Image 1 (tube, helix red, strand yellow):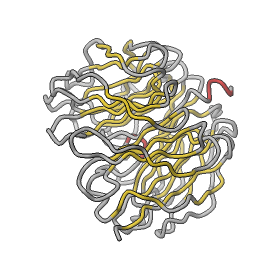
Image 2 (image 1 turned 90 degrees about the vertical axis):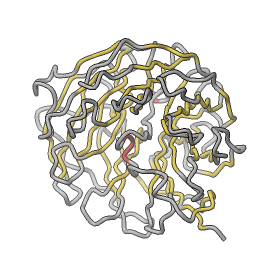
Image 3 (image 1 turned 135 degrees about the horizontal axis):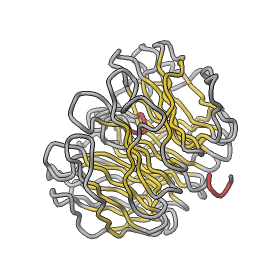
Image 4 (image 1 turned 90 degrees about the horizontal axis):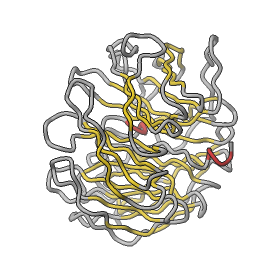
Length: 386
């Protein structure tokens, strides 16, 4: 499992609640200077793969949920409102199936009751929906078969019906699976085989959602680690997609995030390249195509990238979790799609997944990262402008 585990990441995306961070990264930060306090670590289960943020118990404070690969469980850490967290607790596990080798996790209100659900995938191609009780505990609602090794899951409204849908990137199937939501926490026809699959590049490792061609419908971007490219699938507005079109990127792309990096109103892409220790920036043309990639250095083996305004200038910045250098690289945006040189901050051992949100209520974005080798999450609070 170690080799596959080092090829897994959950992304933070700008398309609804992928990665479970705040829904509007720019609006979340007003006074930060883009620097961070030293990390504080909290215990999780064994080999945490993925971390997401959201208010799980209705107290208007962000909480954390972590998918743990080797302990086969989900850790929920409820926030105290000051950037600290209660000890991790594990929701009840389902009775009819067994969670095994969890890979990716996100959250969103799937049944319209104002309470967040958890969505988690496992190595064997199973997607689980845990319905929130509103107090930080969960019950199992439904289970679906998706492609083999769904290493990334994203959430958003793909058919403009006001209901959240799901997409997984299936590493060993070279596909994405689409599950269209019914609004009651179930998907498609409600059966195990409800997902519809679309082919992408080789060994897809990350999926993100956003309107890439300006038609008002969400499209998909998929980072393909095995073919060193990314696939664009243009949405038709009804939850279906055109065939994938592929674009070259760096070596072994591991994670992808979307946002308007140059202020032109079109979505751009940031791709963390695990094999070349860099980050590729691709500026969108507004029609679903992209300019050639421009690369920026990161730490060793970047596994995950997140976007948000970290210094309060209304420009998106980037944070990258670097697995082998045990740190997070922060790249502040210049507003024209270019970035300052990365500044690194220490994290735990084997940073694997990074997310952004205001954890202490000061209006400044903070960072959290799941550390695969130290069985912890690190919390780095953003510093205010002097």
